[in-house]
Image 1 (tube, helix red, strand yellow):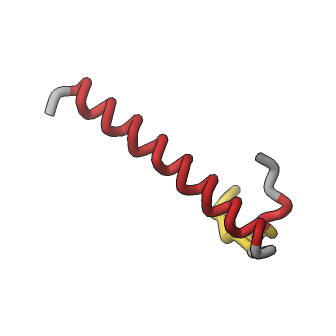
Image 2 (tube, rainbow, N blue to C red; image 1 turned 90 degrees about the vertical axis):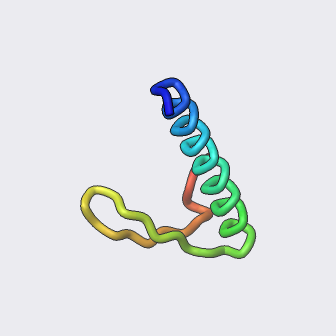
Length: 53
């Protein structure tokens, strides 16, 4: 694989992750669910409705 193809593949993966996380958050908001994230060296549970788009 060339460097350009690798960069394009990485870009597509990152874009796919953005889309899937957005869909997950929208779904959790509908069901008043919680999301577990790792931030600032800690595992945190947050309400999906508290996430700003």
